[in-house]
Length: 400
Image (cartoon, rainbow, N blue to C red; front, side, top):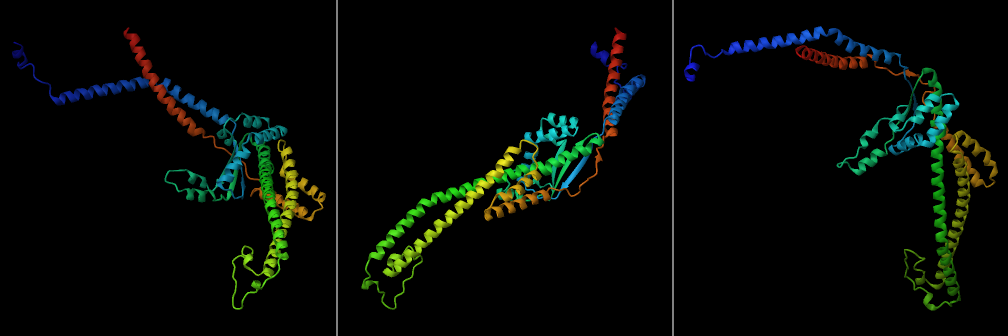
């Protein structure tokens, strides 16, 4: 019976085009419902999206603007020198000096920002150094990189060094930039000079140690040669000492082969060896005394810097110290060395001068429009979602 009912003329299948029209109609109804919800909640959506964007834009607009000033230095820095410079400037000892100087000039807020910066990234937002050209990006190590190529890259020097200072308000930028500039140009070189003096002291100590090590062996060789000379002089010449005509003796080193010479020539060769040894010992002794004087001088300079680096000690003060102690030395060699060293310090001072003494202070863009547009888009999506959610809740309560 069921089969006969299914085969009746009244149970014909619905045409496909009719089903499509029905689905389309239902979709249109759903879209209309969505638009009705949006229109119904239009004020909620408008206030929920526009108001936060206006508030954020107003806050950004009224927020104090940041300013930047950049000093350009015409110096050549290798990759190693650049990293050493950053380590010196961002060291805790140097930052303590900077903050103390800022507080002395009444810039307590900026000093507090530097003190509260916990990472290098935060510090670089306040004071940043960049080398031009930016060749350091080529130093990324890979398995395929040739070590020799990396070493060659590390020897390349950047031609310009830019120090960028960021702060606020505009009226404080001159004082802030002056403190940072003085620290970079006058205090940071002291650390380099201190390191160079330490290396020089180590070098002279090594040279003196080498002379001391060779002193015993040279004196022992001298005594041996003198004893040999005394024995040769006590020998009587024999007929075998006469070299037959037409025979020529050739030696690469007469000193090592003098025993094959006639007695008279052996004595002469030994005398020459003794003279050379005595000259070498005397030269080593002179060099030792000279190195000892230089070592004492450099240790004095090192102690001067070591005792003052904890305070705000600048390279100009060190230069004045050098000029004051020149007259304390009567030895011409030490005086010449000290005068030459003073010239090197003066070169360091003259090199740490920016290309432009008074660069322009630029205002940092706030990006008010861009940030407000982002907030508007986010709040618009949240408001639309909240509108539909409220509509669903309202219908559920009505049905209940």
